Image (cartoon, rainbow, N blue to C red; front, side, top):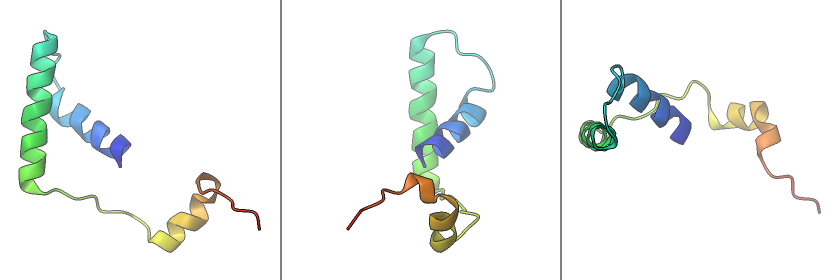
Length: 64
């Protein structure tokens, strides 16, 4: 989820270059406030079961 949110932040808050570190911080805070206020969620494209199959290599394998 973090990667998805960072992608959205980049596209929405940084279409124009920032001129200082303070400007970057202000944009991030403003964007996060708007995003949290709107309670925007993520529309996953697959079910949990499908994700476990497709992303099996990311899950830990426990040997018995």
